[in-house]
Image 1 (cartoon, rainbow, N blue to C red):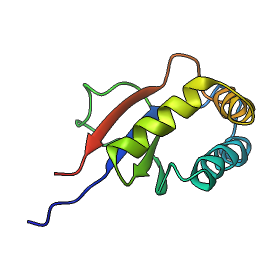
Image 2: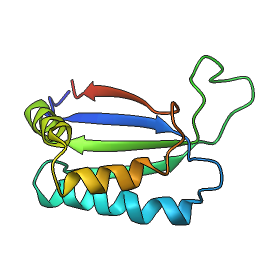
Image 3: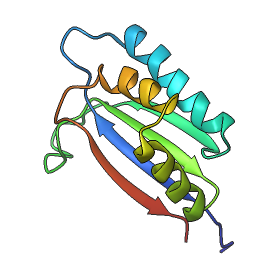
Image 4: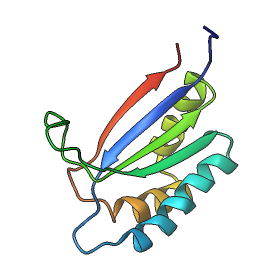
Length: 114
């Protein structure tokens, strides 16, 4: 097995009632592109959940799953620190995106390559 570096931040969430994908994705893309332009995020995937009857019952309720790929844990930590500073321009980009996410619906977890 080839050892790989990197980490993936997973976000599970639902959109606020009345917010469409067409409204969410421009705000998400602006936030993601800013983080990518700053050299934090390497890649990203956005997926819509397709529930399977009889499976996944213990999972939290969510409609979307986003994966932010980082080249290292250090890049992930630097990105987290940057967003948590809550300074412009990331503050406005983050808030614009989060305003479209249902409050209390977001779950995050980090995985690392082995």
